[in-house]
Image 1 (cartoon, rainbow, N blue to C red):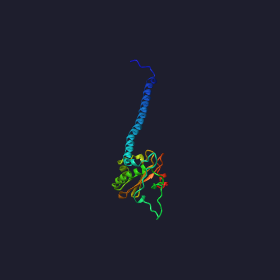
Image 2: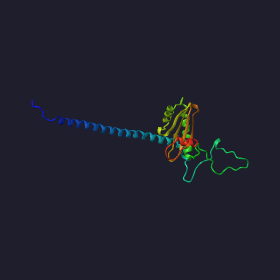
Image 3: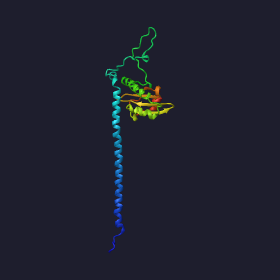
Image 4: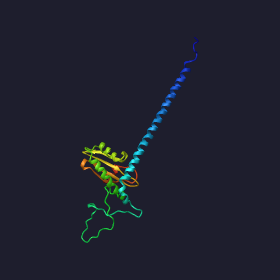
Length: 209
């Protein structure tokens, strides 16, 4: 049998080439997986955002008649104990409309004030049914109402109470809600966030929310 006189290096090169090609293929496959994962996350969040926007519109439907017209505000005189104003004998009522103060001292639009009442009713009703409301339970309950995680802020346990903030801004509005989940003593109150920009709980607290 005639021995093969070719040098060993002549046979080693193709193996190294194949190994390099295999590594390159794995690297490309890894890049492809990362890209598809990111696009998948975006695709998953899109329906959630659409459902959240639809929920906001549905909750605010009863407020369509209170939206400000192009000619100016359409506020009606506030009703209830907070809307009454005591006047001294012989004193005439003011001609300017009486505006209820928002917790932050900033004015909410008619639509925002009306929508806040609708949101508060459904949130309080849902959270009153949560026993021992931990942050995880409160988040789950809020998710069930249609609130997405990106709009839930400051969720934390404070003794037996769980505190949270909801960013409900839409269509140029400034509405947010500050809530405390505590079973039958659950409370939710409106607040006003900046019309644009990120939602900062610390800024709301410094403003007195």
